[in-house]
Image (cartoon, rainbow, N blue to C red; front, side, top):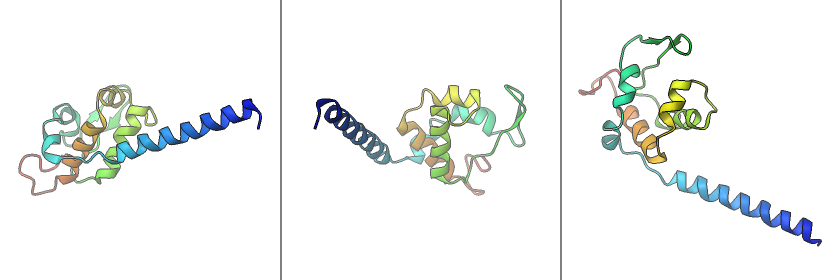
Length: 122
């Protein structure tokens, strides 16, 4: 095998392994609803107002988050952080969140329901 091809095969294999390790590490993160409760202050400013619509950068109906599926919330937050989802305010907010923060926030909102005392509809 020539050195050029061999080098690229090794680089490709290492890239695959690094991607696998990163996804395995992210899979090990478990959300904690109690910890998430202390991390949602910024979220409540928009998501905690019934029928709220934002006007910047466009008119957008802000969804209520309480009771949403945890995996959906985590995927959405990661999507904003990576830039796959496009809403500048959410991108700016999620830029500073760790994988653990995202998992905790998602766990908190997923645990909410109509009888939740502290945050019944959000």
